[in-house]
Image 1 (cartoon, rainbow, N blue to C red):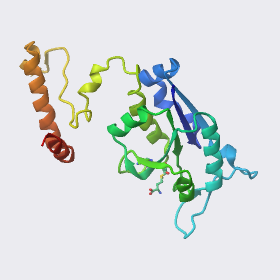
Image 2 (image 1 turned 180 degrees about the horizontal axis):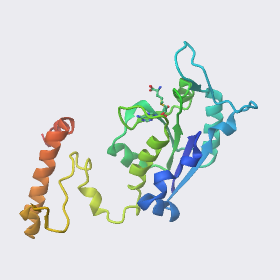
Image 3 (image 1 turned 60 degrees about the horizontal axis):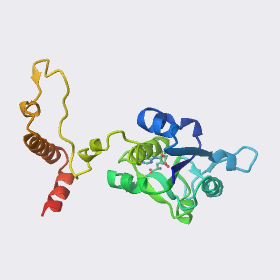
Image 4 (image 1 turned 180 degrees about the vertical axis):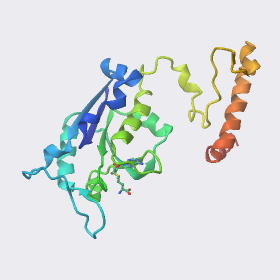
Amino acid sequence: MTFHATIVTLFPEMFPGSLGGSLTGKALDDGKWQLDTVQIRNYALDKHHTVDDTPYGGGAGMVMKADVVDRALVAAQEKGLPDRKMIYLSPRGRPFCQAMAHDYAQTSGLILLCGRYEGVDHRVIEDWSMEEVSIGDYVLTGGELPAQILLDATVRLLPDVLGNKNSLENESFELGILEYPQYTKPQNWKNKIVPGVLLSGDHQKIAEWRQEEAERITRERRPDLWQAFLKTRT
Ligand code: SAM
C-alpha cells in the first residue's frame, strides 16, 4: 500500500511546492508516496464558477460554499482508497504535532481540504466528519502551506523515505524533549570550540552529555513539554 495524499484546493498549482524538493520529492519520484490535487472551482456549477458567498449573520469576508466543496471531496475520494482520513486545515483545529505525523504515516493516506477566504461552510466539515488540524496559533491566507507542512512531517516518517532511520531517534519531540545541540567540522570556528566531550570517543559520556543538554534546553524553552516529560518519568 502506497501512502496517497489528495489535496482539495483552489490553488493546485501550489503543489507539490516544497514537497517536490529534497527527501520528500525524491520519495515522490521513486513512487514511495503519491500526491494529486482536486481543483475545487471545477465543481462550481454556475457559469461564473462561484466557490464562495457572503456569511450568514453578516461580517467581513466570504465563505466557501458547502455544495461546491462537497462535490470536490467526492472527487477526491474517487482518486484513492475510500478509507483515507479526511482533514480540514484550520486555525481552529487540533494543534499538529509529531505524534499525529506518526499516526498519519501508518494510514493509507490523507485527503486534505485547504480553505481560503474566511474558511469553509461548517456543515461540510461536519457532514464528512473531518478532523480539523491547525499548524499553529496564527492565521495564514490559505490551507496550502499548512497541508505541505503536515505532509512533509508525515512523509519523512514513511518506511524507506528517510535514508538513516537512526537520525529519527533523537530528533526533537521523538522522546518528548527537544534535541541536543549539533556540531560539525571545524573544531574551532571564530574561537568557538566544539564541546570536548564530543571529541572524547567515550560513547557513554557523549550520550549523557546529549541527554543533559536536551533536558536543559527543553526546561528553558518549553516548560509545557518539560512538565509532560517529567510526568512520563514518574
Ligand atoms: N476565519 C478563519 C479563522 O479565523 O479561524 C481564518 C481563515 S484563513 C484566512 C483561510 C484558510 O487558511 C483557513 O480556512 C485554513 O484552511 C487556512 N489556515 C489559516 N491558518 C491556518 C493554521 N494556523 N492552520 C491550518 N490552516 C490554516
